[in-house]
Image (cartoon, rainbow over all chains, first blue to last red):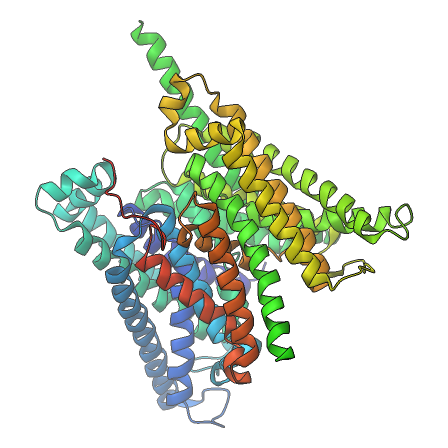
Length: 320
Length: 293
């Protein structure tokens, strides 16, 4: 595997980690969202619009000179901010309206929201419709020698953002808000009775985390330079859900699980990065989603069975 | 006028499919409080079993298309019901006493696994359903089959002791246990019945639209769950009416909205369903009982 390819995968892992960290926080406040990929898509498509507005039509596909590259960086930053802001605002409104639905209903409501986003953007020709949108290279390009720099730029930027988010989450965990989060997980009603406005806490965290997913979407657009509605389908969002489910509701656990799931998933998709022979690589790629589904079932069922076994052992030890 | 009548028939047949799927969702949700995500795949599997049954049985039933259709429906329904039972035994039963999101995650995993395993064996390409020379238009036959299925299900739930037991465990599991009812047996039966009617809906989808594929269950499944909620979980007539209402609305929107807007048929109907779900999470006819702590 070349350095360029390795950095490419690191950047994609960075985007996945951003989604995983934000979804993990949402699940920790007992909001079981299945529509995180919808906010990811929303951010990406808002970035498409910002790019279309700020980059003049017919401008050169490759950035040349420092001035043009700085201008491009400005467009990327504006896209990311717009993606964050839009996803944050939509999530804030949703958080207010969705107060009445909980548990599975909330999961389905968010999933439907994500499908509405995908279905709508699939039909809007301004953002490319079903064919998708190809963004121009704005800061660096993937052409020739510059490719390594391009991959290094995005992987470093994403790594830094992830470290920042991780540090913020750890800081929240150590603060009084961390206690609120634990309280929400353990006993929501008791927390409410102790004077904490649970709904506001939930909707505020939901908005920030969805905003983060929107920012990740904008970064995804400028990194891959191509978005199609299929990128934001439920199946494509499954590795993120699986990572959060496997990592448990701990910030470090979910990051490690995300890295593991990402390596397994991308490995299956690409024949374990060239290690498998062609025919096995094709077979692994075909079976990747089925394997992902089975991992999800086996991990949850085995966790539940282990929990039940522990209960039986405890009861046996305690005696009649 | 003829155009409107055609659209109404389209809407009725689509609505009946939604309603039958929604009843399967509602039965499982009512008994286990579990959103059986794999129900969409059971529906698609039923359509595929019906496809193969029609192909294999056509030489034996030449000249009697209605009998052929009935045989295909019975085979597809039974196959889909058995698949639902297997899913319940393997994936959901170990989680019976488990609270939290894990159950829904398992359901999603089962759904993804079934769909993708199926794709490996039967490919993701759409298949044309074997044509049937029915004496009536396929959509009218579909409506009749689905209404009869609904009546059969209604009778089973409301007029038999088995149905009474199922309603009892949906109402109060612990008290039902005290009264000697065996929940595991009834839960399995509930899955079989829900799966059976999902399979029937799958065959009907095939004969009405003529094309099936393994990913066909996602949107109807999603909409059907909301229909089950809007129609008040456990209220069969409410669910049936909500399903038909959505089918009619979808077809009329697609037929009468100008072309650029009618392309947004799915986002529009999903938005409406989402609004209803948020506005009336206890169903349109349901009462908003306070949550038990």
